[in-house]
Length: 143
Length: 262
Image (cartoon, rainbow over all chains, first blue to last red; front, top):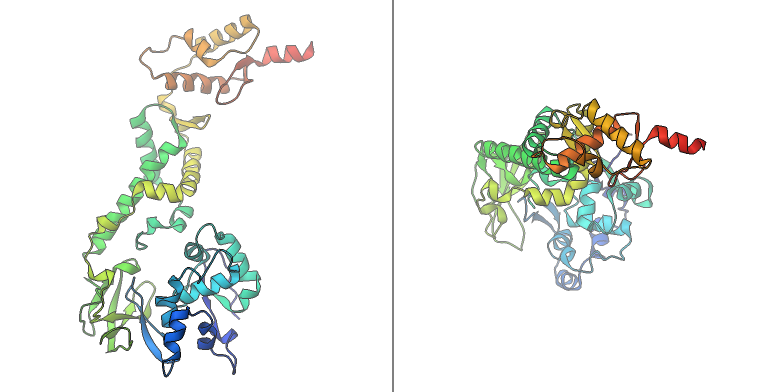
């Protein structure tokens, strides 16, 4: 097992292997976070687990994701109720990572995603390394 | 703010040890001011110098490699520069058809990026509007000095304070910093006058009152006169400040001790 001493500059990412089960895949997890409009749209889609090329509108990078994840990033994560001031921090961190294509983010970057009033990088790091969320969000060694 | 500028991030300023170039910057600033300055005033020239160096670095980088733009068509083997990823360079390794019902037809280029080496995919022949399609001059995206100070000033102040503390060319009093070479001469005669005045008064005296009896150059800046005197008094064991740093009151240690003994 790789030992990684994490700090506020360590990158973290959702580890789906810790979450998915035979009866629960990542698409089903993400469907819980869809906004009403996207939920309705995708219910009519023959295959919401269809893989698409999600395009990052800032960097141009392409992320191969499910249609559900793509909708989360492009639409649902911009809705005011996606992450609210009362969303538990661990849930907010999970949603923030989903909203950025599950691209690696540091506690410093996660704080920017959530807003400076929501928390601070040290508290986020503590939650990521000691809280229950450490089971599903893991540090990623830098190259 | 554009994240390709490293000076845009807390991480840059938090981990920044000021080097010899920065020390030179602090010295030049202090010399040009010619009078005691609060720590905050030293922050601006440091930030300005760092931002300017980074702008020059990015301008130089822009001369290497074709800038990546999502609307363009590319071919395998081409070298591209990715402005949104810190101007990293990459080489196109393969091209495939893209798929997303949200957009019209487009292609996807697999790029081997440098530093660190990694393979990532980017959109090309992209029909939708994208910010990267608009060429922007590097100066337009450079962070403004005042904004950087507003956001990261707390980190920068700590680094500047440490740099000033470790530089023996600087002296400090009451949060103000001055080049040692700019101190007005406070010689033994001045100190003896101060001692005599306090002795006669039998009570602590404010520096303004002491200064009135000193023969400092008339055209010397008042803040420089006060700083030079206060600093000299802190260096002389005869004197003790019984007021505050902001409003000092200079007393004689000898008289204080006599007062305690009676």
